[in-house]
Image 1 (tube, rainbow, N blue to C red):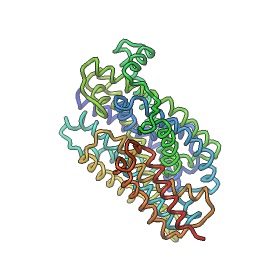
Image 2: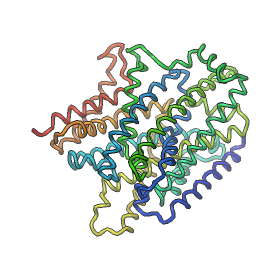
Image 3: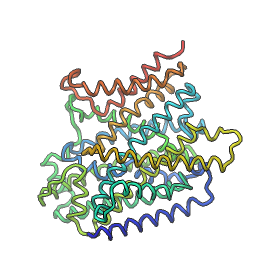
Image 4: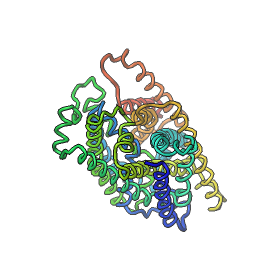
Length: 479
């Protein structure tokens, strides 16, 4: 398919996003940008958050990982569901009761100013690393499929996409993102369904027949019962639970959208609706991964991992399916990138710069500062995407989950200590504890074969990190 034609469709899609952003961003202010005036529709938030939670990495990496790990990722998804229950009935009531704009203000009230700044800083670090990893994967696919054929370099492609995101989030922030995420999630799910239907028809198989064929090849195995394996069911379930608690419930980007809903009950319905739909969507992605493998074997396609889906969609499917794939891929990209930049801007302005507490600052001064921070994070995203390009990791979903284990672990320890105990701490030592904990986890992970033999530490590294932080906070607790 002509790269010019694909680029035309991408441009048209972006113009539609700009139109939605212009309409929803009218008469916006800083409160609109940060928390959507606490008036967002919970149904729109729930649907849009599916796209934010999945991202382009899920769209490409989850199907690509089926060859290696079968359907084991669904074990983690079941853990997500348990985690979302904790978020709905433990964390959200607390956030609403305190009327938080930034969820890390809870740490300030509970432990102190150093704990508050440490929590916000770890969120900024984690979300920056994770969001740029997601962005890199999709930019690389777009570069290979479209922009390289037009003579546009990789850095310019990244800059162009970030410029698009800045244009439609610059004014409206969360107020706009709630609507654009809904549009983008719709496009992503439609693209997923179209690709599944096309491959089934191409293979002349029904859903049952295809599942039987996958089962014979070992692709449909969900539950792994070897305790030594990193895919062990109990490990994956518990890890999934804590991943969702930390990466959603203790993450300003995700909670920023939830607390933009007016009532607690609606926000809880939002989270549980998203969790239920997520189970179905992840199963569909895994099913697609099995179909892609069957299609690749039938057509002697050698692509594997993250390259499997793009290669088949753009080179072995009709042009209209290729266009749908590109639009769906972009739709998976934008919700994770636009929400991340907006949340990072909000957290840096509120938690680090304290612009809401600046005495004598006018709304115009606050808005100008917010714009500078917003643009600065876009440039930081450009830098990190180029770093990921240099690293060239074959599977970005593994990178993202590993980054989360190191950077969300201290947040897990901070929030858990604050909720489960009534003790105060020597606040000035909290940053030291939260820095030492990931370092110890890195050493543990690097030398795990020497220390544990055949036993493999996988995603539960996040829990270990949180536990070490919790113990560290106990050690610096005040008598």
